[in-house]
Structure formats: C-alpha cells, structure tokens
Length: 525
Image (cartoon, helix red, strand yellow):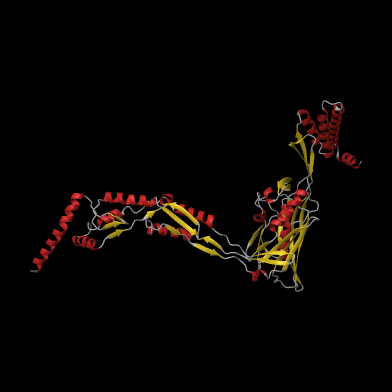
C-alpha cells in the first residue's frame, strides 16, 4: 500500500513539473516567474531578453545625476558615466535562470512553489573607476575645505595680543570614497540621488590661556647690512617682514623658504647680488640669506631643534664661518627648525634705519636660570685664493672691465658652549666647507672686431688688471672717436696701450726663462 501511494505522489509531482518543463523546452531558456534582477522583473524572459533588460536599466541609471554634498551650497554633481559605471556581475542572469531548473526534481519543484509565494530578487553589482571617484572627492576637498585658523600672537607696543582661532571643516576623503561606493552598490537607482560626504572638524591649535604664557625671550640675534645697496636692503627688510609675527606650536616645523617665497617683485623683492656657482650674480631676492642666517643664530641661542641648514658656497662677512644658513630655492637649500619646547613660540623680526636686522624668539623659559649658551666658530683649514681669472663677456660693451673680489676657501666648524652649575660642555653643531674663488676679471667684448679681440686677448695674457683696463679703455675711446677730429689721437693711444701690453708680455717671458738667481734679482729690484 505504501509503495502504491508513493508511486502516485511521484506521478502527481511529474504532472506538475511537466507542463513547465515543456514550456522551457519549447522556449529554450526561459526564466521562471517571480524572478527579479535588481528592480528589473525578468519573469518569463529568455536569458538574452533578461540581459538586454538589465543592461538597458544600468544604462538608464548611468545617465542619472548624482549630487555630492559637502555642506550648504557646497555641492558637486556627476553621473555614472563620469565614473565609468558598468554592470559587473552579468553572470547573475544564469543564476536567475537556474532557479527552478537546477537540482533534483524535488529541489526544482520546491523552488518554483516558493516563487509562487515570494519573489526572488538577485542583486546587480556595479563596477566603476575608483581612481576617478577618488579624484572627484579630492576636487571637492580642494574646493570646499575650510582650513582651520590657529590662535596666534601679535606683538605690539603695548605687549602681546591673542587672535582667536577658527575651527576648520575638511572633507574626510577616504571615508567619503567609501560612502560613494556604498551608495553605488546599495542605493543607486532610488529616488534620492544626494550623497552626503563625510566632513570632519579640524580644531585650531592653541588657546588664549596657552598663548598668554608666551612672554620670555629665548634667544635674539642681530646682524648688520650697512654696506648693502638699496635693492639688497629692501630684500632683507621684506624677508624679515614675511617671517615676523609667526606663531609656532610645539612639534611644528618652520620652513623659512615656504614662508618667504615666491621670490618675485609682486612679493616685494628686487634684483640684487647673490652667489651662484662661485659668482656673484643679480637675482630676484638677492640678500635673503642674511635673513635666514640671522634667524638661524636666534634659533641656536633658543636651543630649538634645527632640522635643515646649509652653508653658503662662499664665505659671507656678516657672521663667522659656520654660523650662516643659506637659502637657494633652485639649489634645494632651506633652513628649517622645529619648536622643540612644550609651549608655543613667537618670532619677532625687524630692521632699523641704520640697516640692522634682528630676530627675537619668545616662548616660555624652562631652562635653569644659571644656564649660559654661546657659540664659537673655529676655522680648521684655509685655502688661499689662486691666480686671478679673466673671462670675456659678449653681453658687455668693449671698454667694460669688472672685477669680483677673491674669496678664501675655508673649512670651519661651530661649537656650542654651555655653562651650567659651574661646569662647561662643548659640542660641535655643524661643519662647513666654503669654496675658494679667485678674483674674477670680466672683460666686455660686445662690438669688438677681430683686431680689437686680438688686442684684448694680448692685454688679458699679461694677467694684469691695470693693463687690461688701459687697453680696453683705449679701444673703447678709439671706437667712440671714430669719424671725429680726435680719432687719430685716440687710435694712437690704443696702439700705445697695446704696445705696452706686448712689452709687458715679453718681459714676463724673459723673467720666466731667466736662471733662478737672476729671477730673484729682477724681483728685488
């Protein structure tokens, strides 16, 4: 009896399934009713029809506008097409078809019966160019970030004043990218296409209470630029102005180059002399190294941590060897230091009418009252200047003779000397090497013909600046007098100057060939 009823049950089950199976066979690959892929009802569709329907849906939502919102009035719009949106799990159509078509007869029957009571929805998964999303979020940050404003100090005649800070609001870029990705996978195609990006508060550093403690002089230093011309003096004053008033918090690094650049006339700079490959050349901002050097010495006296410092290529005169700090934007030279104290510090910088620049660093003095700090330069080696170097310059007119002073070469080191509790300690702060540069004589050649060039070369060969000036001046005078009544006299003067140079060359040649005793006699006489 049990076997009989079991057979009847199987027969009934086959009768239920056979009509559906017959439909599938006649239709090829038809998806069961009650199946959705995302919001797309693919009931009764073939696999190809389902693929086309879902593709059309993805194309449709790819064109929809999404709004990225940072805050009130701070929005950026984009579409799925902008980020390369595409349907990534196209194989889900096969999964949809397999429902009611795979498994044993009982599993298929159960799947179809379940669909009669509840639809089955398969998820659409989306692909996109994440780098593009990251770039768009970065653009939102760049456009809408509100930078914090730290509490700052200002020194006036009546003392220090504290300026209030302001909280900043910044786009949390990694978190915002994650929010957009989540929206794409789980909310895309809905009614609300506004995506609120993550924004985090950036609290300002400092407080009125903290800055009110900054009153003590930690270190001060002054240098003179009395011999500087108007342009260099203006550059020194301008660089000092840009640094003056800086408030630096504990652990914060101060970059002189970042603070005083760009070196442009719009930023208050003028062309003035500066070092370049052993030469003094005109450049915008020439003289700015005296600003960084003066601050460097104030920082040393304040015993702050120096993180970057470079010496000049040649020796400078306004501080001792190894006490300088060069700035060269193109050469990668900067002066940086860290506020290594536990309190904020304030930099005061000013120049005076008698051409002195002073930097004073204020903070909270925590060093023992009996501690004394000083610095001493020690020259380890000196390299004397070599013979004068003569160069021609086609940008200068004939008659021009310019000279650049020689620079001795030095190897030096700077000692830090600390006296505390009756004991004195010494340590080397830095070691510096300065190039030896000979006196450079520049001779103008613009407008010189072949004969004049030969005569100038004769003068240069004497290695005597006076002779070079005499010949160059005479040639320039002859050229200027051409076609006038004084031309004959000027030409004769030029010829005489060249003849004198030739005579000098012959005498030098004879002296070089004479025996050693005769050479001594020539020198002493």
